[in-house]
Length: 504
Figure 1 (cartoon, rainbow, N blue to C red):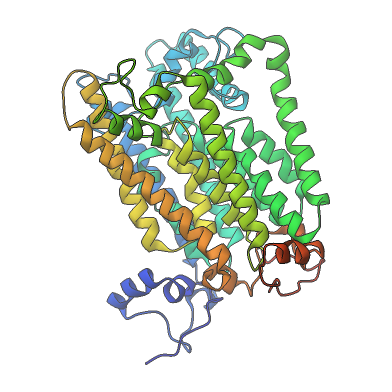
Figure 2: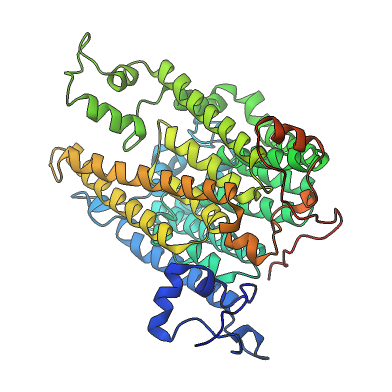
């Protein structure tokens, strides 16, 4: 029997630390032994773990383009966009946002997205329209989709590269993002990989001890899709634990300034168009598959839904402002709980763990949960808890929900495909698996000995950046007030570099 190899060897970390992967590896002889030569250590070897992961990411994205090909011509007859799982907002909104008529986003037409996404749409859409005017035989919608897909896939590859750079000792963790069926089906449904790529680059710069530049990328990401702004909360928690607020303040200020600068032209000159995104989100009703949708369905089992005979969720769906406040309140309470968890945990939590918890909590209690939002969580779970068993269960739940969702959309057109209860069951399964991941990540924060990433990096957080270091002195008294034991955080020299490699 071979001895157990150390988990800092890059090609074997997942096979030894992840029970699910270790079990699967038995089919090919099991994990490498203590005296085996890891593939990365062979001079001249081209197919290293990192290159394999990058190649797989490119393959999955190419297959994603093929999977969307039935919808590229825009001839969506007989619900082909749902029966072939190839629907994409990118193509639909080329026409809905007036880009096919040469309308400039925000100037000629209010856009329902934050400004960086609107700029991106115009930057790619207007040249396509101009070219189409001079070449009337081309399909402008198809060209627009393909150009967008190419750039979005580039951002997806960048995201995988960043995860690899942040986990040089554990390159196979990035495969959770690179080979995910979720990426295959949803990569180009919307422009979410634009924000994900900007966020990932910001996190890389943060880990490389560049908080100001990281804030610029976080600000751009937040101006594309609002959720990258949530990273500031986890950074603040870690800053409080180390007593180093300066890096947080730098990131906070540059994030806010960047967001303001890119929003300012539209905010000032086309204010009503700028408000479109915020008004739409405040006015939107309960969306498909959310926590609130499930509750409304269950209410309908006991209440008619008419005035005077409504359950709580039915009533909330008719009173959107109250629903907004309640949704924000539940998210706020979740963030407060994450703050307490981060401050009371026996060791300083890793930033990616806290970031996953915040984004997951937002999705769980949001009244809108579009099918592509799952992409927000993929790079975060790869960094926070790269254990394949729970991730695969969640992936199956997401794919099942996507299938039920498209069946429900076909049914909305008058042709019943599945019972409403089946769709609610798929929605519940998705919600429960995200909640389970939330619990598992929180458990590893509270019990850091279960954290494989921490073990691979000698107890350090590879994403901490300038927040590497011992605990702040005030924390001992705070933890004592809550009767939590003294911190077990091993001292790390303040000027010790984070164990993060270069992108290559």
